[in-house]
Length: 369
Image 1 (cartoon, rainbow, N blue to C red):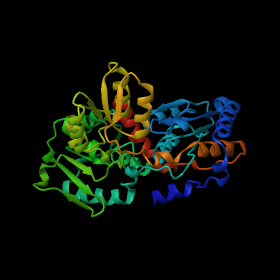
Image 2 (image 1 turned 60 degrees about the vertical axis):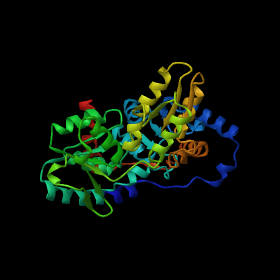
Image 3 (image 1 turned 180 degrees about the vertical axis):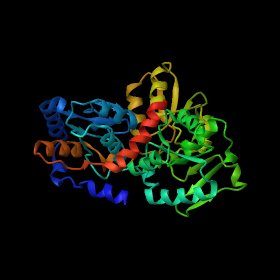
Image 4 (image 1 turned 90 degrees about the vertical axis):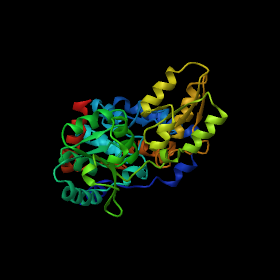
């Protein structure tokens, strides 16, 4: 029911075909003029994974939570045109004031990872896990999840996490309960728990498709239950990519995101959040060599901004995040011109009953980091 509520509140409209026939120069000029016209009434957050044609107009860039927090801190903006994906715009809507309106330029800009855990699957899983383990589990969810999942976690005493603070939040969770259910990215959950000393043989997988626990051994030994979800971009980096570079570029450092598999993280030199990756590259010595395992738009931007270093993608055949790339210059301009015409295309409105519990989960994280 909660998912249906969300879908009902999201006004879905498609960009008119005419925008595809406008020149980039004309569109860029129009965006500049609208930004100037609206001034502080308009705020454009842009995720690091967005295209350059969009990022150039961002008032702030960052990862998903940084952008939502930045939007929440900006009380002057009447309109927040969020250049990211759906779950990020949801979070911004939940953290901003009632008079502020959050708009997603293209409603097709989703997240395959977030879609791997829906509320119906999660409710079924929780019922079974309670039967198996009783009241010994606390749920945590990566911020890369739907508002409904965040609300489920908040309602059941848990919190959200980011890739930057996952360690701190797992440490906090273990002070609350004996076991953790980690949604929806199994790789971030596994890598973080392993770094905290949880053996791999004490981690189980919850398969939402079969509605079953995947584990060989005594289930009483399980400490962490990992939802069977993943990032379709980061899962494409492989140990074979690393082995190839070790042979061909032995002096090249390998830096990956913890959404990569355990094997890839283990064979890399460094692993950390998007902010960690950016900071690491910016602080690196001139002439140093880096292979980066994360989204291609960000890698390309790091290459452009750090030309005193040799930077490549860990996977040379990697493409940008397809859903993040739904938002382009034509969609951004359409969203802004719709405002001018007093039409709110693709406004994101999270129902109050979901917002209430989801904000609990977000605040538990913010209070503990």
